[in-house]
Image 1 (tube, rainbow, N blue to C red):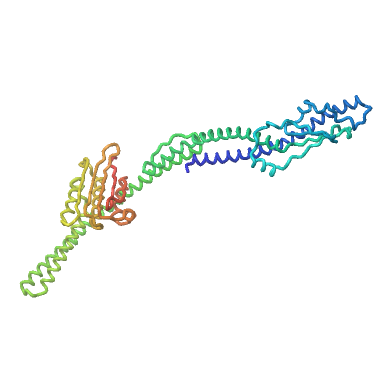
Image 2: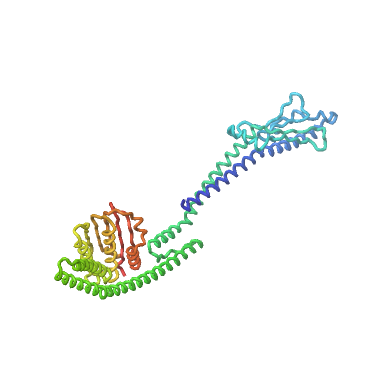
Length: 456
């Protein structure tokens, strides 16, 4: 998951948890606010009756105190204003046929759903009645009892929750939206860093990143820049060491070629001469003598060894590009394979672009890659047709593209993981030249493609 989406998802989770906590708190506060309203109603009515009590006590001092209250004057609109909605107040001791005086409970809000009406009392409990004396100094004056209406209390709590949730949802949506935009804006430079890392993976190590405002991103950008510089230095050092290794190996190949030519070539020529002499002498002395036949077998073996030696010398000595140029050497390479046997696969050579000015290590590398790929396709496969394509891609990124494709089957993954000397050698040469090599499956065979940069 992308980091921005993950952070936004976490933000939404936090907002949802906060919203749930706010809902629970609002439910508890709204439900218990009825208890506070009940106590306040009882207190207000008790104070009003206390004033009425002392008023009646002063006007009708001849009456007993038990008969002073209640009087009809207490059940008035003024008293009703003192009672909160959903609360009923009665005077005790209760007189016969005296009904509680209740606040207006209709129209308090929408009827709550059944699940809310059943869950809230279960978890938050029921409401208790509130008793207040009319006068602390006159116990016989009676008491005021305020009782909350359970249904009205739940309706009030539901209406309060709806009002709170609407505002909370709007605030949560606004916070989530603004925070998401802020997160996306803060993490936008991460794309630049990722792009730089992707370019570094493709070999473009020198990446100049912009300065970031965030200290953490600035530290990451600085580390990426330093890493790119060190990778470039390490790559250059490795390429230099590889080039030196190839030069030393080429020197050894040339020295070995001279030794093989001077020692083995001369000895094989001498053996061939001796075998011919023995064969001639044996033929003159006796036609049925087996010595002549043995000499002919030695001559045939010597000819075979000399042919193998010539092939080895061709591979060991300096490549033809140093003498003929890249284009002519490639034509000569293909013609030499074609001339060895008519039963060999068909080799198609496709040259594109100007190859005349390609020389030095680039030409040698291109020739060695083509030589090794053709050798592998001819010796290790059952190809009927092989295509060798060499193209010079002009422009800012001047490079030489070499592609060898055959229809001889083969497992591209296994070949790519091969540690043979041939593939290892061309990998080293291409790496030293700063190029790339890919081995992929093709139609009924394999495709080996190499890119060798020519720009200095």
